[in-house]
Image 1: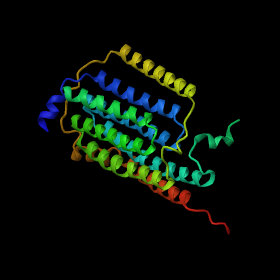
Image 2: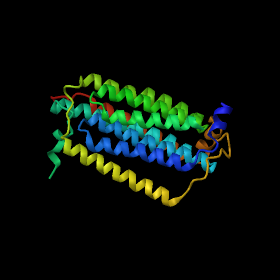
Image 3: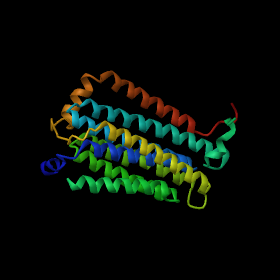
Image 4: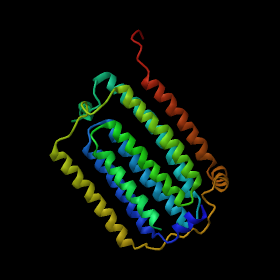
Length: 109
Length: 165
């Protein structure tokens, strides 16, 4: 463990920022280009995880534990969101027999 | 040091595979691998508590939930709805625009200081627990309420409606 942590010394913070923004953008592209509701929710999970990683990196960078506590809360929120979202998807599938997001356009103007 | 770049490449590659593959089950499996690379990132940051929680909650609980819903709905490659090529190109271009904007603003900020572990034991369970139960006690209790509400809501939503009411 010590050698691994020693290895970490010297990664610029910029690279963490860049990695997180790339993964966040991949999540956004997933939301924009897919029509399967479940894959859209998975892309949202990707975005949440990118932000989590960045929060942890900043927390280590500043030597402050609050960032990691915040990541913990984001994980609890993601778990709640996934449970309710998947329940809604199951209900929608039971009514419309499809998980296409275009079958939910009744509220569209 | 090069370990970080290798794992970063893996996480970008597998997250791309999540949104590229047609089969939803493969997509979920690639997402599991992506979350595993995130766990490796947390270990590299010496955030051991977060690594364990990420491993158990994300890879264990959330991904099993996704897989079970996919199995219950009996989804596969044939039932997968696809958008037209034009929409895909527009979506990819919009996402790339977001990436360029964010990366450009990061470059303008110029924070290129190396990441140095000032306090090596902030990611350990004991120190995080002290912070969590002193400063963040109220949010912790509220998050327990949130989880309870989410559980009740999920059960209510997923239950079959009774016709006779």
